Length: 139
Image (cartoon, rainbow, N blue to C red; front, top):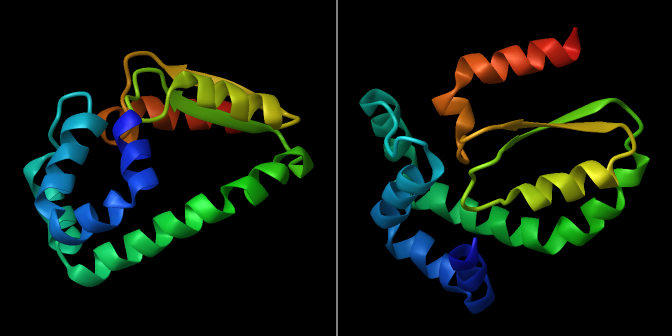
C-alpha cells in the first residue's frame, strides 16, 4: 500500500514499530480484516506478543531482511517446477491483485484463486473457504 511503501522509503516503519505498537496493531486489524476486528480472545493473545519489545525488534529485522532479499528470491521463481496455487484476496488494500497476477506469471506451473471481497487476513475471516480451496487443490 502507499502508506507502507512511504514508511519503508523514509525508514519510518522502524520508528512506528518501536514506539507505536498499539497504533500498528489496531491499524492492522482495521485494514487487514473484512470486519475490522479479530475475536477478542485471539486479538488479546496476539497483542500480548506484539506489545513485547523483542517481538517488534524481530519484526523490524525481518522486514529489513525481506526488503533486501526480495530481488534475489523473485529470480528463483522460474526454478519452482511444481503445481502451485496462489490464493489471494481481491480486496486486499496492501497487496493488490496485480501482484498475485505477476507472481503467477513468474511461476511455471501456477494457478490463481482469488477470494472475492476478501482482505489481507482472509484466513481469519474465511477459514472454511480457505480450507476448501486448499483441499480442492490437493485432491
